[in-house]
Image (tube, rainbow, N blue to C red; front, top):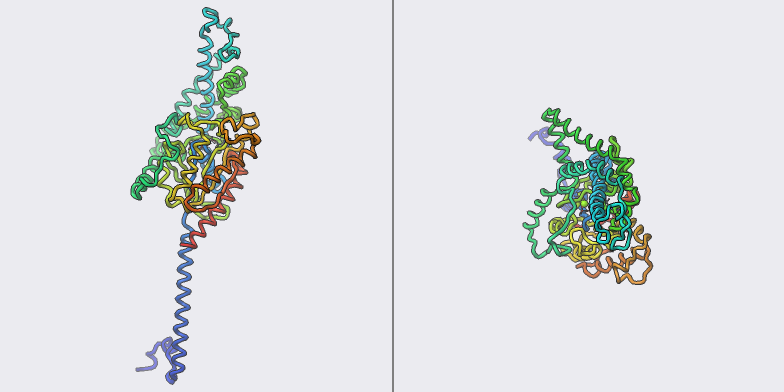
Amino acid sequence: MNTADIDPLTLAIAPPPNETAQERAEREYAEAEALRISNEIDEQLRREKEGEKKKKRPVKLLLLGQSESGKTATLKNFQLTYAKREWMAERNNWRAVIFLNLVRNVNYILDMLTREMAAASLPSPEYVGSSDESSEDVQLSSGKPRLKFKEKHRLLKLRLGPLRRIQTDLERRFGATALEPQSTSVMTAAPFSESEESESNRRVLKEFSINSSNGWKSAFEKIRAMRAAARADGDAAAVRRIQDSDDEIADVIAGCRDDMKAIWEDSTVREMLSRSKTRLEDSAGFFINDVERIAVSNYEPTDDDVIRARLRTLGVQEYKFIFELGRTVGQEWRLYDVGGTRSSRAAWYPYFDDVNAIIFLAPISCFDEKLAEDRRVNRLEDSFLLWRSVCACKLLSRTQLILFLNKCDLLQAKLQRGVRIRDSVPSFGDRRNEISAATRYFQQHFREILKQYSPVQRTFFVHLTSVIDTRSTAATLGAVEESILRDHLRRADLM
Ligand SMILES: Nc1nc2c(ncn2[C@@H]2O[C@H](COP(=O)(O)OP(=O)(O)OP(=O)(O)O)[C@@H](O)[C@H]2O)c(=O)[nH]1
Ligand SMILES: [Mg+2]
């Protein structure tokens, strides 16, 4: 063989021709050692890559709690804090929801006014045959003077009449999400049972609930799709019709601005609401105090308006965010927002099996209120029962539970008005009727439930929140993000 045919590399690593047995053994040992180190490095690189992949897996976060506990409002805070671009793109879509909320507030008053004016015009037993004028001072059975309605009230009713059609139009646009539940046949706080759920059953339910969901996301998508379809078809008339309808709604509302303000500020109307123990100002989606700013044809919602806008969630809604800032820039988060009424809760269970963390919202201002879907059930009691089931759920035993004791602003206002906790929660006893004692007491109760019912020992994460306050909520979410992330990374390392 000619030396020119020999590959120089083979030549370079070939053992020397006069190698002794000792040299050969040393060489072979060195080669084996080099191979072992090289394999180890390869394995380490593979593990790191795998770990990175696992860490890059989306963080899944589920929002749970009864209806009107603030789940969707919390989700909006996440979007506002971590996905601002998307938030800005979506903000104007909330205009119609805020209009609907406002118009509903006013129509609620008009309905009550209509009923009360009709009742007031009836002859009272004591004044059979008397005229309306003379019956004005008749005492009602409550012992309070009869409300005095005037021509002004009749005119206000008349001039605010067009708002009924606006409400119907907007409700049609948002479908069932726009309607609040009246009753339910579900009698338990947590109608999900682990024993009845097979894996395949869960999957079917999960797909069903996602597809059948109808929250703000799908409501907005429907409207966007309608506009896009009209544009794509080059149907200028349809595009104009949609635009005209939006403009007309804004114009009618703007035209009613002064009357809306007048009806809300009217002392007889205030007295009427107070006698019926209605606190419209504490209800979801209350906007009459902002009527001067909102009832203008070029109204654009502010961040705070959007957070306070109320559109209930049906089914389960999945939101994907790539965080734009914070510790997890570029990390995908999947947030699941669910409908909170008792009849919606069976749809939650399929989402329990691969979720990193749950934020459980308990509105603690509701200690003296009843569930909208079941007027026999105290709302705080319902939150305790629901929390107990979530804590006890075996499928969630490794899931981080984070409790938000929410609506602290409303709790404070209620206590300042003199509402006594112990009248609704006798076990509160003689503690001071103030916010710090109340939050301490409720928090202790939630902590004990967690300790008693969790299948394994777990940390109690709790935050006192008012999620309509975007600034303090951003700070809370920062803490939440950090603790979820720490857990997420720890798990990735363990896997
Ligand atoms: N004052 C006050 N209002 C709040 C707070 N949290 C939520 N809200 C309001 O309460 C209403 C209901 O909140 P949502 O976030 O829609 O409730 P939800 O839990 O998503 O309710 P469902 O979708 O029916 O299950 C909204 O109008 C919110 O703006 C709070 O801490 N303080
Ligand atoms: Mg909701």
